[in-house]
Image (cartoon, rainbow, N blue to C red):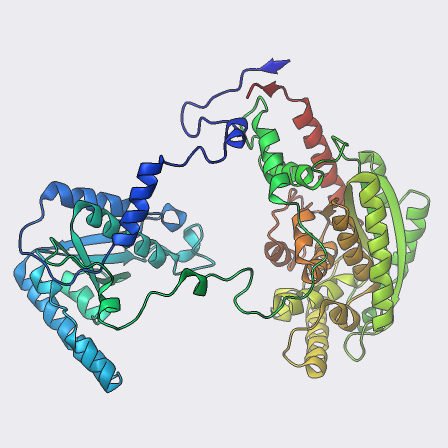
Length: 565
């Protein structure tokens, strides 16, 4: 049965079907579009002004247009100080003249003479000045988008200036942006408080010139570069990136998954984070016949020479005990897979004989063989099931995971060493010392240059990390989604992404473990974990629980009624 699509009373009332039917329907009519491009091309930096006043209603329209500019995190950090008092404009003009002369003295003589020839009297001539200020007092981490690019508040203010400039041009007003100021002096002139910075002085008024081309271009100062000189494809330079063989789901698949969700008889995103994971599975399986994938838990075991340094609270024999229990279906991972209806596969990846502190973990040939083995397993499981959950067992492998994470994320040992399985304070200190010594050895042999992922696995890795990284690459190559468990599987995925960045598009973080480095690794992968249960089980139990949720979520989505386009 087809249901009537719920149409929201607020927000976007269009459906995905409508948007897909005519992707260009949001465009303005041709006359408006032509006028806009004509306006952009006619914007000029005006230097000569008539003294006539600017009507308040026009000024309001221009400032309102500026206020409609995009801003990071919708922070709207711009402030507009409109100055009309002649005394203030005189003081500003003097300050600008001073900086103009100072800058001229820093130039080559010919360039200095041409600069001094330019007409820069707009501050005195224009009836209005607008000092644009940026209120930076909000902590960058508290504004969406500024934690990573702290200066985006300044960029937002630049967008507001551009809006103001275009609005003034369409009104017939002129704008000149003057930045020949000592910033603090200008701030003091208009009385802005600490934490607020000025972006210069905008002269605003009726222009006493009609320049057909930009002023500095007419003055022979510079030319406008052809757009072909400022547009580059893919990368800045002609340097080639390492070859990539994986491809993430294309945008047709990604948008298609979202379109499919849009016709459901439920608000978009009603399943929260789970919806995003379901979209990832749907995009990866785009065009394939299976509506809901099955799943497999791949449990990989490895042994580590680093345990000789006392970095684990358990005997290395536990690894073999878990392997034996897995063979008869009685390990925690095997039981979890069986309870969730997932297929189960266990691999003994072997031993890393090196102790990390004095010797490399494994020879390069062993790394290559294990990566290839993991690729084959990942491809096979991916084709058969469409979804692969990863688990591991290996006494001492939290130390190995921390070592790999420290190098890949460029962080100090203390930031990545955690408790592991039952460690105490003394053992954590010992792990930190072992890790620091291992990193010093690697730096001594490789220097400060980045270490290739395969070489890093040989230096500091372990056999299960190689197989798991290969499994990620193999599963992704056949468009299967990979559900990660704890720190070790996430670090293996991080290695895989270093080798093939597109692999990240196929990852789901099953859980957040108790290990200190796990959050850092997940953040770097751009993944938000589905579960936060403080699990200590390992063996892929968290990945199985999360995979079961994803499969159930897919079944829920397929069971919800559809609405008419």
